[in-house]
Length: 370
Image (cartoon, rainbow, N blue to C red):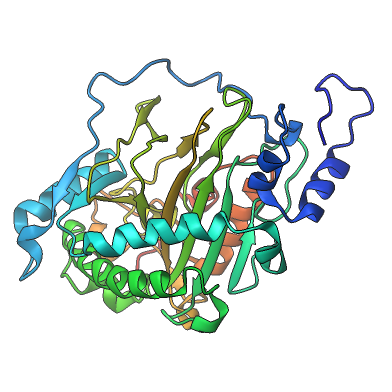
């Protein structure tokens, strides 16, 4: 699979097809001893990105200790500011025991470091199965760059999945982690609802975060880390993402045109606003691009939990909620259901785009959700 970049007979589709047929993922490439990154993993530099760290680049860290027994107005304010200015923040004292998060990270590593034969039956780029391994999600169009990482995903529609579908090597860890993650979701739902100026029940009553897509990510070392990205730059199309990362670092967000680090904080979870929540908030909350850098040595693991509407709500119409609408702040997005929104996002992603939000902008004052 190692072809020179200046080869005139390079066949993009063939190389991608060979990679997918191997069912070994990125780790399989590394284990094979490759010394060059295949062309479809090479990420071109961003001409519009500002160099160097932002001088005020401090990702907000919010302590949830005070909200366990009821909402704290200072915490609500901190989340409002972080969601508006950054789109990302870290939370500590979130209620998930360290023993559970540590076990989840160990389980993720054990899952991916199994022999290829233990994973290949679940390997597919098709997003339909409830449980799967993959490296390329969907179809990779020529000219796009694949992420230098492997993923294992579990789909919890309405919060449910058949545990027997989850590989035994991490089944207990995933099921236990998700029990706690649902509690964190409920707290964040109330805080974000109040941060929008609504009652704490708003997002819960809309049932817009009742399903989960849990993705266990593994980032092997790259032979050419300057040419590849662990995760290519993107925003999340979902409502909300909660990320657990190990202590190796590498995650960056784009803030004021600069790529800045999201440093690991012991015991913290990272929360980021998704595109769909930006739409519902009428840009009061912001979804931002993020990426993961490749590394020359060692590996990185993380666990992302994406929240989206429950099954029967996915076809419902969503738009900016009335609590953020006023004569001075009219709706800037039109009505859309979640299925159409994500479908459009996937089409844009296959052409190198990052967000579907621009497609749903409007100029009139016609839509809001009661």
